Length: 192
Length: 179
Image 1: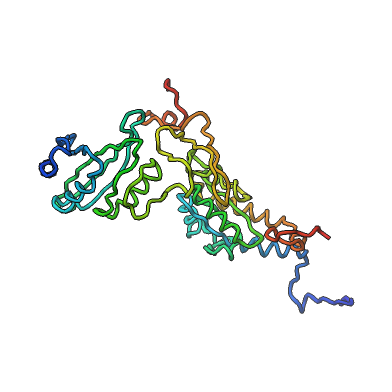
Image 2: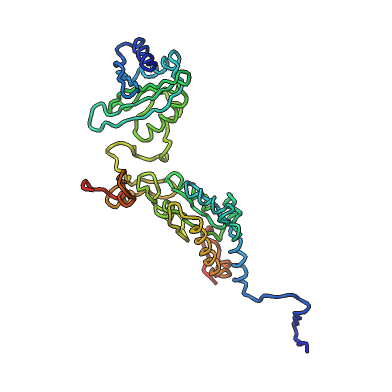
């Protein structure tokens, strides 16, 4: 299948830097050994293999494992219609990797979001600042050790931010319940 | 026989006259021409637009002038989720509105943060601006918003206008004690 062929061509060019392609339900994933060479790999993927559409860059917090961060790139080619996923690891002491904004300009905002919510810096980024939380917010909210309710901080000029009242837990629904009363969002303990 | 008086009023010649207090007259003018400032931030803004459209006509009450300029509006309808980042903007726009001004917090998110109990959502816009009416609902039906606006009209009617006019407004630094 074409996505696997393109993944193998990428692997031929970069050798042992990339793992053998893992395939699951038609999606091909390649693991990149060294995060520092990500721009090089992405540039080849865009120019030679035609992956001209960066769908998403996201980050995963492997809490407790080392390396702590995993960055995932979702590539797509409009010409050939194939998807590819690239994963790299970044350790917590470093928390930094080079940017791919030179390859796809859309990576600008995705990387800003990762910086804002996870705290991973991107070297060479044209404008690395917070995009969702306000400037001067001291925490990185989507890390696994950050509570959903938030921590108190200062909002300049206006107010302060207090932790939100969760009233016993996030309200989740039980999907697939037989009627709306069962599915209603409420705090769930392991019994119900 | 025609009544004679110093100040004569002949109802056959002059038309109907309403005798009222200045307070009541000015409040009557105000309540039937409340111009909303739609702070439409999220899904409640869709219901606000629906209220302004033809079926749940807000123009019946004189409020179809949804001026997006705070200087020209009377009531700010905060419709939608207020995030911390947006709270700064809401406060600034509220400060730019001219007295007298009222605020309606429309929907669950504007009243208390709604279902978003999280680090990014402001838990109720009443933490930064004084709210007169809270409308429950997610989103509230247009009729619920109209109910709040009608109650706001009654509140406007009750306002002691001339007493307020004599005092300097809250934006001025040192209000003089009432004479």
